[in-house]
Every structure is written in structure tokens, then in C-alpha cells.
Amino acid sequence: MKQGSKLKRSRLVRRPAGAAALFVLLLLPLSPPARADPSDLLPNGSVQSGTSGYPIYRDGGASAIGTVSGSTTSFADTSVAPGSTHAYTVAAFDAGGNYSPQSAPSNAVTTQQSQSSAVGLWHLDELSGTTAYDSSGHGHNGAISGPVTLGVPGELNTAYSFVPKSTVIVPDAPDLEPGTADVTISYWLNSTTLPPCCNGVDYDMFTKGDHSSRGGQIKIEVQENGQASCMFRGALGGKQLQAGPNVVDGHWHQVICQRVGTQNV
Image 1: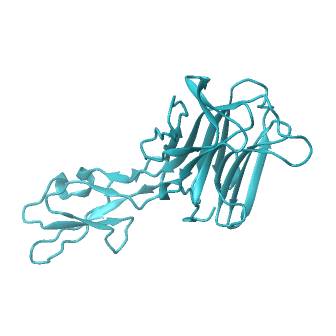
Image 2: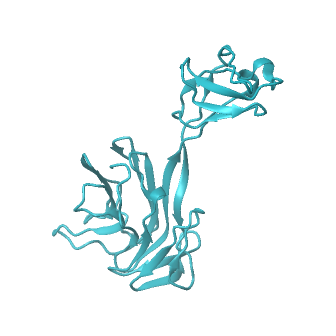
């Protein structure tokens, strides 16, 4: 999916007649910064008297990647990849602009692996109103459109019940654009009505983007045989995976779709 593609809206929930949804979850990875131990970076492990600042160097580079003040004893490098290992050096400069040589390299600093963070979490358990509230803390509330029954029994608490063409629409936002990052989308479904057989009709459970644009689209569906499918479309084409049991059997099922690198899981 092309980084930064602009998609007008996300249709998070669209169900067949009699279907109920418990929640929808959208996960994107966060890349934590590398944090170097101050005792490794600063000469003698402490602030030096008369020092105005410390330029920071990474992996033997000749150009500083950042500068901290003379009273600062830590530095977070936010421009490194998750799971990578680096060594840092520092120099010191005074008020007259005089610079010392770089220090010996720090101990090796390894960043953490990426950690997933929910950018959208809709429990769909409201009992009134026309808003599906986002519980991720990012404020991506959705608007209920079409006939939707609230407060039906769910797998955990309550759920929404949908008819054809009813949906929840969430406005697009920059942090809902996965770009080339790994992404996970999960939802719960309880339905008894299969899509009409043999004419290519399916149920759209989650859509983002437009099929006519190569700028990017995510589409999570239930096919004619009751299997779940997920499709990711980007600037270089699209991939679709259809797998699993029949999820249209009157029981609650959790469907999880992941894009990891260029693979659908």
C-alpha cells in the first residue's frame, strides 16, 4: 500500500441481514527509539564543568545526529529501526565553540522490536445514539448509517445487529494510513445468512479506500461459501487470502487478518 495514500473514509462494519458484530480492532506497529545509557555517552559518566553541549554521533559517523545541552545526561535516537544495534560517541563544546575529540564508543545499544498499538478499537456495545465510540484513545469515532439495532447479546457484552447496507463510517485520519507498515484487523461476527450463491456476491465486513484507486485499499469480506477473506491493494497491485471455516453458522467467530511485509496471514 502506497505510503501516505489519502482515503476518504473507512467503512468499518457492514453486515448481512441478522448479523451482529462485537468489535473491530485496527493495529499498527510502533517503533520505539534507541536509548543510550548516559554513563556510556558522557565522559566519566557525568556532566562536565564548563561544557555548553554534547553533539551525539552514531556508528562512527562524522556528522552529529543530535546535540544535547551541557546539563543533559541522556539522549533518545528516534531515527533507528526496531531491533537494530548501534554504538554512540559524544564530543563536548564550550561557550567559545571549542570542540573536544569524540569519546570512545558506548556499549552496544539495541532497540526493542516493534510493538503493536491499537489505532482504532470499536467495541460496538453502545446502547443508544448514532456514534460508535473508539476505545483506542485516538478519537476515531464512527457514525452509524442505516438501520442498526444496538444492545443485542454479544460474545462478551452487547453488540450491534445489522441489515444489508447498514454500516459504521469512520472519517479518515493520518494515523489510520498503514502505508507499508504491518497491520492487523480483527472483528467478531455472528451470522446465519450466507451471501447469495453463485453470482460473485460477498459481504463487506471492513473496507478502507476505493477499489478504483491504486493508492490503497483494505477489504475484509465473507465469501459465498462462508469463508472469511482479506485483501490489501497498493501501488504495486493487490493480494487476497481466503481461508478458514464457514463463519456463517449462527455462532460467534473472531476473524483476524494481518499483512506482514508482503504476506497476508
